[in-house]
Length: 450
Picture (cartoon, rainbow, N blue to C red):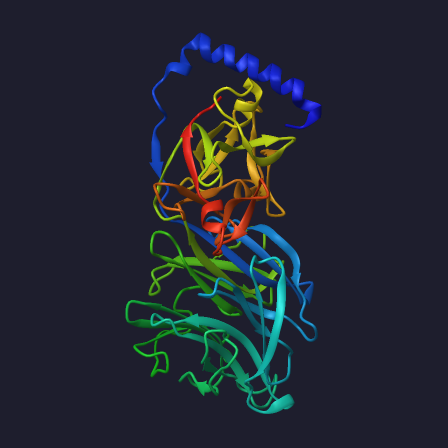
């Protein structure tokens, strides 16, 4: 606890203890448990109406209401970052591909471990006619066989020419070498191709550059032939739309997003890939974000985490537990014979996750309204301000413990792939690694000390 509120904490603890003893709660049965289950988490990368050279990152628990991860998260060394598309690769990195310029024959690549700090990798030549052509709107597509592709639109005549979708395929695990471009198999004057696969069917949502409608084609092969199953105003969304992007929802349906470029507004619709709802304006980011993609990640693995008043004990540091002190989350030696304040600081109420009920949050028992949250990858005790950002930072999903033996590990809800672990006796978020990490990131959720 913070020195300025230590006396307050002791008074509050004493009062709370008296209430518990007087009410008999301390003798109550052990709290119930519930299964976390995988929780959907969504990441968006977008350039904005005010800048074609900076990319913003947003996150959401429902693919609808978005909170800011970082403004101006990435600016390439030169050129633009229009149409940024995000992929989580098998090596744990997040990868971007993006439009580098209005004219030219390259697409850009960058990567990140945490969605916040991005490293430029390279520009790759894929265009049709050097600097006289245009190469736009690259989109990641990972096929069911694990192969990684980028689908982009190119015109040999530049901005005024007729665009056609092409694809390249990664030839190494580092996504550094690629095949030569081949046509995707759609007619000329189609642009902004976005492909998803469901079952054995490839679904291609693509802008007809002549009519300005987003149309729908299907195929049994990524290379075609494609059959248009939705043309013109087939979905009732109207014309003047571009940049379709899709993400799958937990109920199995899909959400499609598209940019109404002439009006400066963004819309979405939900459906089963064949039929969709009417378009609805995207709250918060309409008029701000431009031509984005949305990455869905799942966190948690269905492990059961004990809820209620609990203490979280280290697996590899005997007698050491997580406690808050001066608002920092630390690993310290606290036991049944420790002072009452220490035991209370080492006790948390494990509740359903503030950002997603399939995960968990840790509320202090002796400072009302305060939860453990990560801040700059360090865990600390902070007051719930009701914001979406706080709820996400204070939510962790249960995983089978890396150390085994019935232990538990906790994955950050809004930074999937990052887990609570102790390092130099401080609790922090780290990406999964080898060495000491598995044991440092494993805990036992025990009966409460306080």
